[in-house]
Length: 421
Image: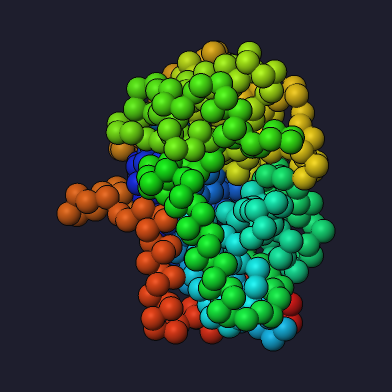
């Protein structure tokens, strides 16, 4: 298996919708599941910590970056439409692209997630959810899964839906220890025009209630909803709209969004989260839990802070306090011992020459483990690449105009003939 090309000291902020975060020691920007598998196997073989990035939402990267290999999996265009209203896609395929193709076919299921920047892998990692058209119940991406190909301990396995152990913002993928390569979704035949109406209604609902900058200067909703109410409602009731720390501010339009108002740091966001949690707890007794994934760690702000997707190849256990508990079910049950606030003690990574502290140090590290090293991640024209949500919507629009449905089949490890999601 060919070692993927790597970039040294690549800034991760440009790959997140928050636009926040320091560099990764190494970055693999993979175009398909075959290269994704190669990157993970390589990291595990060399016992190098790694973390996964998809469309860049629902994640906060530490100011110091990530001291290991960041694998960005958001460029795949490989999916196929199968008999029986099913679609099989690689984990790096954009939900927007799959939505456009399936709505055009008159297959219902993905229209509920219109306007949410996500890859298929990210959607199943967090069990993506949104309100049903009646606005009284949630619909979950996990309910669509029929089967999937996963990488576990370097081995490719074909699994069914039960393997995922889906819950509210929970599941096997989020707990750690496995990486999704592709999945097959079973959808429901429906009238294409009715599905387009649902898409329009969902986009209008989000535009009316969410901050204008939600897709480009935030990570999406920051907190899980407490049982019987919404996080936005209790934050608003505590008078916290507009609360600000540095460049991070609680949206005045939707209190469960934290915006990067300009120059925000990960430290600003984490401090703001702590203050919101504390004030809501003092006012209502409710303990809010972040649904964000925290990637990397900063001295004096966290003892670990890595997302559940961050692994060393030696251990794949979920990290305490990260919101990765597998058994949290949709009933709204919460582990009250979980504290989203960040302990004020020295990071284990502090003082070790952290991520990106020296490009030559990272390059030497890469050469030592025998990888192909590309240039540092700096666009020649100095411009920041398009944000994840913008790319996803542009791809969906382009596919609608051209009628293109990605490649005709999925290639790569574990791919089977079209007989299952």
